[in-house]
Length: 494
Image 1: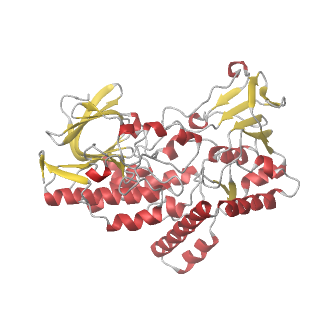
Image 2: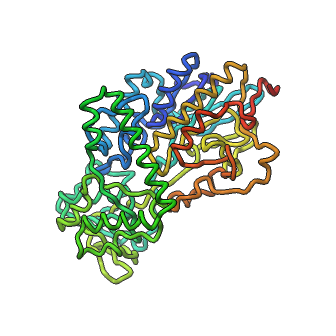
Image 3: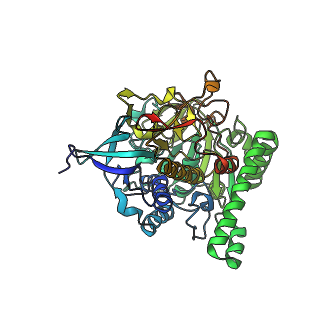
């Protein structure tokens, strides 16, 4: 029986045992060995995204030399790899560093309440219908940015009439049999371009139905440069070199999309035309209305999507949905797509900080009214950091930066005797222009939730820049006691 009357105390409480939470545990264990920590995980296993999603072909859309941890070399050959291999990598990391012993599974965190008088958070969770209460000096949110309850599912006219099966990738049935069946995948993002080639060999036919195209680029799943370096360098050194190479290559490409969008667009479309041949309508099916990296670029390993399309086992249709019918989908053009199974790859349902309720000294926290501090903390909210990866690069690159910052912050507090740290606006920051938390990204799943997220200012450190190379250099030089992060000891400013 869980006893909610006797809270369990830990110095640092981490919420989430996905790739972020396991990384956080590793950093704390190495750099803050005098601090206790506990990880609360709502599910029955670790891994987060890589344990939740089970749809065919689930894989990374970033290379494993940057999606992997800085301190734990990726040893697999495939740079773009499957979800099961990533999950095994996270599990191996947790076991190797002893982080698995700190995880409390099936703990669904509901609320967190901060007390300035006690300088601690009280966190409430449920497990098997009972209440568990934890207290901590510092709360590290590593719960990701989307709801684990379900994905984004727009309302489709006539859905109730459809006689087949409708499934969202986030809730993929283990027993779904699509062999010899017509499948329509609604969507054009990373999930859709993964599902289509994975299902095509078994299904009768797979159609990717998109309202508008995304940019798609093919890359080899095995990096030839990485293969050469691994033959001549020790594993750790090779990993570091390949990681650095990939970081700067990604950063260079992203910067060019900002400064030379038309040239990058022409290059990407030229590559698609080379893949599909001169008779394919690239303008209609693979030419977005936005510039490259205004939305996330879809990675296609080893040209698998293009091969599926050229084989005739898959096709792309660009049109609007009029209604679902008994036997498929009728389009705005009047065409009807036959379907036995419809996959709604329509995106994630984004949330703020683990769908929890937060209060500070009895007052509810509305994160939309706070300012982001370096993209990881919130103005006026003490002893709280959240880990949120990059949109335009590998998620884990920012996890590493965030964890390093948290460890430096905790060690500074221990050295100075501070019990509270709170980002606060300086007088010169008052009235600064507001910008969305992420303002250079037009994907629907982001736009739908920007009004719930903290504001971004026009000056450092009230920025969420989404630029790893620049942030890495700056964060290393930053003073922890920077005049914005305010430190207190038992309500007396130090």
